[in-house]
Length: 172
View 1 (cartoon, rainbow, N blue to C red):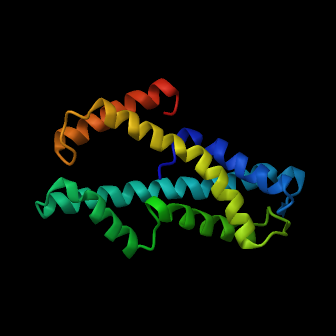
View 2 (cartoon, helix red, strand yellow):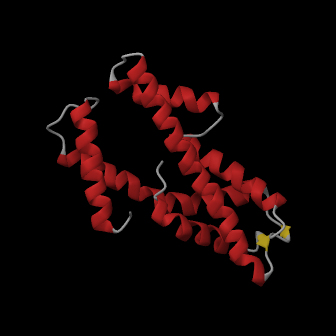
């Protein structure tokens, strides 16, 4: 799962508003912006940790002279050691953190909904915005299908084409 930095404020606002409108949480009107910032901080931290783990995995692969195609496996191992969710587990990690924020934030007056109801609402918003990642990935792979996945050339070209697509769609 990938969260685009430019979409984090929008996702944070949408999660907060969804929870407030469904009366899952109660927030004083003057503190809604603060709750949005609380949610935004969790999403930003997710991105930071994801990048950090990816860089550690790349460093390990280079140090051990492993095949670059092992990146996914090494990332998963590092994430598991740090109890961090990537791929399908990303939603679980993010919602765990958001639940903690909702329960302990001074900005949230009351949490009325059960954890599973809160999770479902948050994941629905997150999925809406992260489905774009899958679409972009598919488009990039179509454009570079002549390159062998796992090679350094593939990785460089993938990132270049992905960056161009993101820029064209206003995601960066």
